[in-house]
Length: 211
Image 1 (cartoon, one colour):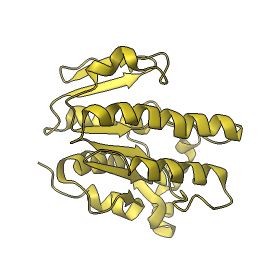
Image 2 (cartoon, rainbow, N blue to C red; image 1 turned 135 degrees about the horizontal axis):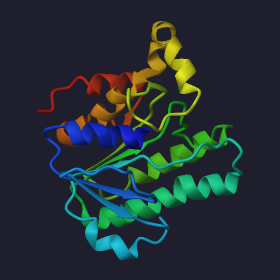
Image 3 (cartoon, rainbow, N blue to C red; image 1 turned 90 degrees about the horizontal axis):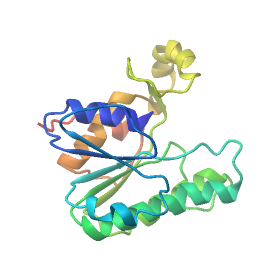
Image 4 (tube, rainbow, N blue to C red; image 1 turned 180 degrees about the horizontal axis):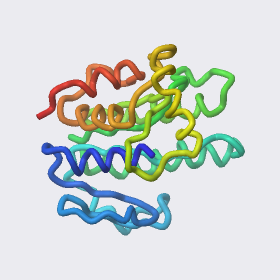
């Protein structure tokens, strides 16, 4: 959902000149700005290594839910896969801003009782030690989907009806998908004074002028 959203906003944004999508299957979009590479195994990127240099930002949106997934598999996909991709990028793009889509409730201490939050926290912490210009952890909560996009969970259609009420009751956990994606683009152009961006930080950054 976030990957589709940020691609959509990048295609529209006047400051974004070139986009490379690294995917397991085609996103089905053709655009002059867009190049797409299909990779069957994200743990083996050697074949595309020389195509990953010269970029200002990486918006890393790959991930899975922890529901129904054992701890070992969740760790392997959430931590190992992310680090494998990030390490290859960091070798070639020291001026890159790496934006990692994490989630509200992530545990930076890595010591809490919730497994997914610890693993996400470890991933954030290790990314911030890498040789990027800046590594940022985006922690969105509920995101109102962008109209016309395809990849949102079925239950979002129900929650969408509750959006005005949720925004009133729990504003600290509510964004639109567009706000999250514009904030990611703005972070690459303007930078961020915070490495970990909670919902209120995301929403504020989305309002910054980046053009």
